[in-house]
Length: 446
Image 1 (cartoon, rainbow, N blue to C red):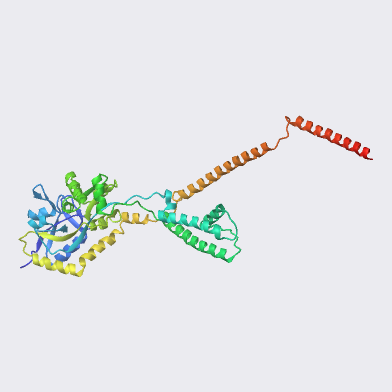
Image 2: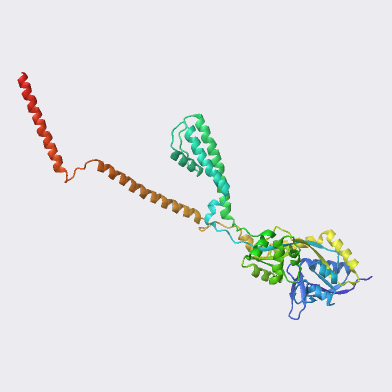
């Protein structure tokens, strides 16, 4: 049987799939796209010409209000001969149309807006986890106690604690080590403190120079809980049947999320600007094939780690189409040769050179600013303030202590000067009398 020489092709005009220009009179011109490469290969192998048609709603096709929409509806109503454009094989579509040998198996997942940057106000505590910080604090106490008992030279706990902590901050230890055992003890601590301080410095610099982001939702269970609590909403593309995956789930939270999608009609057209606008609030997730996020939304969304299901892609046509086997043979050769995967790889590679993606990549690493170092400056000012307050407290303390000492000694002032002089005169008179008595006694003896 001879293959038809002319076909009407219904396509899905999506970026990366079919990049098109639609003129005011409705004619469609295809510029590029991974599916366009497949169509060109089929046209060359089967020797047919074609006319490109685009559905008014721009969707793949779904059964809505008793009629089929999108490309599936165009083929079902006889407005087109074939439908191509990453159309998934579903039970409802297979009931009304026939499909070719699958040429792609894709992962269905969800994505959210990339979380905002973490404030660098407390960046100095990020390099280590809380467990590690606790361990370092315990080591400081342990080294102080051990040094107090094992060192030959006697030092107080306060002196040793300050010296050990200062050494961790690259300060000189300043301990007298007369014996070899003292030197071995201190050498072990200095090696350990070197590794701790260098590790902290290296990780801190990476945290400051490379922007760190808040934790986002990457797993389906977390998304289901967020949707159930009302903090998030989940959108699916208009014209697809992805919500059925949630309804068939055995997990109550995931199933409830699917019911909420149907109840609230959380649908959106698969257009980049609409998806960006919907995700802009940071509280919206969108379910779509992974290719959509990697190609159309490259480096602009946070893609989930979970795979919701596998989507099988094929070309759709009427059940009485004459040349299904010829199309199947060509598609098998195309997929076996790896042409389709190469086309997808080229699309993803080209996205890295788009202006919006390149600007986001170039902004990922930047030089340090005063704002980035604000925590260090704040600590410095806080330290100076504490030192100033401590200095004032010490001044008052020593002044109060000196006043107490002065009160213990009788001061020589105008009030008690007379008393002091009287006591002095009385002492002199008494001394004269003693002298006189002593002289008279000496005369009697002689």
